[in-house]
Image (cartoon, rainbow, N blue to C red; front, side, top):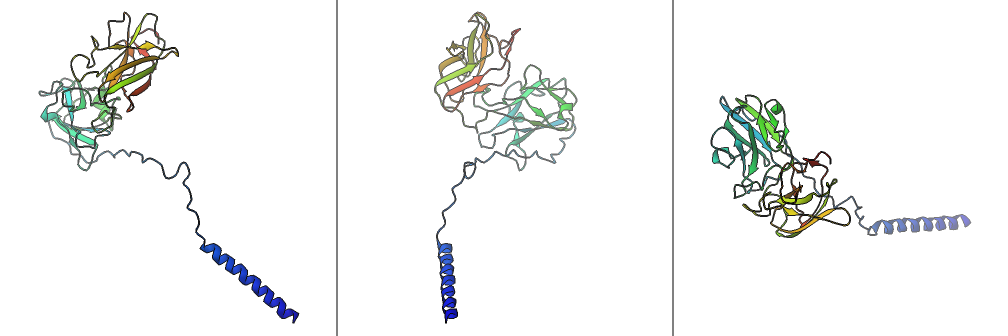
Length: 295
């Protein structure tokens, strides 16, 4: 009798445990909350692979193949221009317009008369801005790919320009442009902007100024004669400027010994322009001066 009673007691306990497991498994479990590194990651921009198999252009021709970041939109229209064979002469001409490489969005090519040291001693790339200007161009020195460095070199005093150093007859040359200002990339809107600059030592008596595309052309457009705006020394040692700027504003920082005469050879050592922020604020640092015996 005791054995039977013990059996039914154990059986009831097992049944109760089984039912609790079943109900627990049916409960709705909370959805895990993504951690700080999950769910909100920005998609990294993936650089397109270099195109392969571009045919040699034939005798008397050179093909230039260029990577231009942020050039996938329909407004992108790049050209090669400069001291080149033909009638380019630093203007955008139809025969020097580039086209996208087959199957690519940001690799461009153009075939020109064969380049050599005599006929192509200074040239570069830019995009049409509607005013034959320099709003859309490389912002960092080129990277010469494959064997391009055997035929071209970066111009010593203008690192966004190229020089031909060997006969490029029937050659395909690949060039990478790490950074560009293009119509495909969002830029600041026009308005009142603030620039704050951290600078190396400024010699006593020198004036710090900002030059840039304050105007679309003419006076104020990269104008070192009458378009440089002087900065003010702040209590914390930075230099500041508040000014009205156009959309897509870029600038450089220069020095003047007399506060009135400005030169491209006296100012920031870096060749790249500073861009204005989308919020119309630019906090920049000049690492070194050029044109001074000290920096």
